[in-house]
Structure formats: C-alpha cells, structure tokens
Length: 350
Image 1 (tube, rainbow, N blue to C red):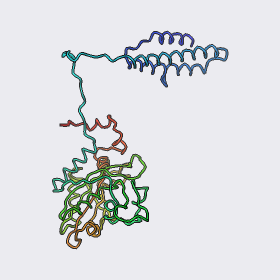
Image 2: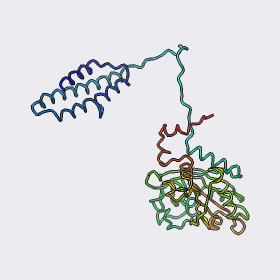
Image 3: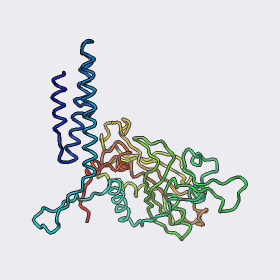
C-alpha cells in the first residue's frame, strides 16, 4: 500500500493539465466518490494494527497533497486569460449550432387547434389572473363549492365579510380557461364557436400525475337548437382526427356546476389498445375530457336568453392528451427543460 501511495504521489506532483476537462478527470480519478483515495481508505481498514500509524500518516498526507494540487490548478485555470482566435482566419471550421425543437405540449396544442379550426372554431384567449365572477360565480359555482377552498386555488387576494362592491371580489390565478368563455359571452352575441387554450393553476402537490400548473383547451358552441348530439359528433370527429380511425369512445354521466347534463368522455387506451395497462388502470379506457350542455344559469349570467339559445362546452388537459399520444408517463418532464427529453420531439423550425 505504501508503494501505491508513493507512485500516486509522483503522478500527482507531475500532473499539469492543459484545460479544465483534464483537471476534472484528475478530480474524478483521485478525489471522486469512487476515486483512488476512497479506494485506499477502504484498503486501510484491513491493515494490521502495527502498520496503521505509518499507513495512516502517509495516506492523510497524500490526500492533502491531492486536494491542494487540485485547488491550486483550478484557481490557475480560472485566472488564465482565454485564448483569442483571429476572426480573419477564414480557413477555420464554422461554429455549429443545434436545430431548435418544439415542445411536445406545443405540438399537441397546435394539432388540437388545427382540428377544431377545420370545424369552424376560432381561438380565444384571456388573462391568467382572474376575478371571482369570471372564474367561479358566473359559472354557477356556489359560494361553498370546494374549488373555492385555498387547497385548490391560488388566491392572490381575498375579500373580507365587511367588504362590498365589485372591487372587493377575490382575485386568483385562473383554475380553468372557462373564464374566457364567460368573457366571450359577456362581450358579444350568439352564435359563438370557439376554443380557449391556455395555462391554468391548481394548488396541488406535484407528482408524476399532477402539477400545480398545467394546460387546457376548452371549447364552447352556443347557438339556436344546439343539442347533445352535436356535442357527441364534434368530439367523435376530434378523437378520430387526433388518435386515428378506429379509436373507441364512450360517455359517462358526471357533474359540473356549469353544464347540465354533464358527462366525462373516455377513449380506448392508445398504449395497450384496450388490453389493460398502468396508464388506463387495467380498464382499457382513459378519461380525456369533461363536457356537457351549458347550464341555463350560466347563459343568463352572461346576458344570453336561455329560452332561445343553447350550447355545449368541453374541456381537456393538454398534458393528458400528450401522455397518451407520446406515451409519456411523468408530467414533471414537461416543465423540467431536460434537453435530452425535448430532443425526442425535434423538428425543424422555419
């Protein structure tokens, strides 16, 4: 062991790196968690009691030498001026650059928009910071509804019981893009046929299946004689366009404050094709959106005659759609900006 320490000491003394990469290789070789010094200390545990004092002293001196050498070389490289190359040398190779890529959520968002644009839907947008009326009250949310609880909503300001007037309403980060539907109906007259893509926020614990912010696309169609059959046929066409012909879908009764009747829509799992997997919880079906006929109270809140006009609305999470389309099992990958993940979706940007 003493011979090893002597040889390594000579190597350290003679080491003279040309660049930072060589210095990093030196650090890994000697000082890394799996480096030579760590290995020598492991060997030291097996040395006899009579040799421990001599061996221990030599080993500690070698460790201090390696650490001091690394630190001095690091400081020297950091203070060394960068080498400049004449820009007039036209024989030098050009500096390459990587082609940019679209984010998978942007790819799917654009595809969803294109499908609905072909059906005559326009794109509408609204603010991400909303008041209580547009985010909750106009959409038929009772004051005691759980979505108003701080556990679900990021409130920016809360009104007190003594407050009154429109300016005293709660201000929050929007929990859905349904607020854009309210603004559209308040500002115009039917018919409306629009989709509302955007980012929304929920006060939830971040995990592989949930995040505190995510993206939605909601749709609204209000006109005379709009029926649930129109809703079903619109969504059937959307699923066939997005996931391909032969994708099965089903509607299950549900409840939402702003639609009546309401339903959740499932599609046959695109990963296991109905045979059962972790994504579909071994049922063969995956829920991708909620929908229903616009509640008459919502129409009246927005100044629309509910005896003359009817409409349908739907909403989906872009992350869930993207999970199924690209078989991505962890939502956190969408917001971590890992270049290795994003390169899988690399397309040329014009």
